Image 1 (cartoon, rainbow, N blue to C red):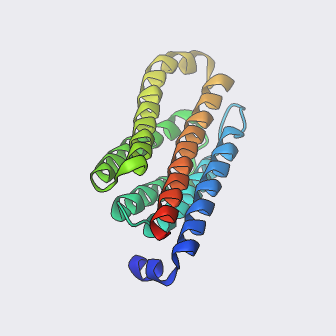
Image 2 (cartoon, rainbow, N blue to C red):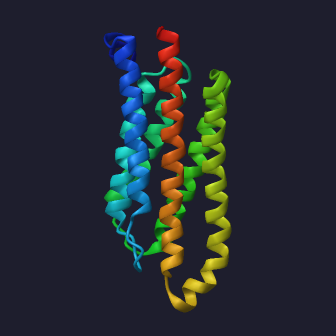
Length: 191
């Protein structure tokens, strides 16, 4: 089905769709950065962002010439992580962090696999995206161990919750920039 959809679009339309997908994910990153910095982040808000980004990435992945299956898998994992939040609403901070760490680690592994099928600047941006997700997971893991004591004593702090929102934002922005690079390379290939 994805290949049929891809063949139905002209080269120019595919480039435009990839560009729109990249911009949309960057805008979702901006939305994630603006998540409320109160005591909690609603799971449905996180889930909605992740499902939306995952579906956009899934569609954009189906339009790619290189690493299509890896790109679609990364989008699928993102959408599934979002569904987990939507179907299991939990407003406390720590139950939310563990699935995000898992999502980031799994997504970074999928993107590492995509390196075998990517070349040039797309390969660099794919590596940056995989590296960003891995680094964010590590930061959450280390922040989690340090902040466990803080949260046990004081409850979730504004700074901790705000930094979690920035994790989503950073991942989305780098992924959006990757899609913009893919669009640029597709444009060159179509010319």
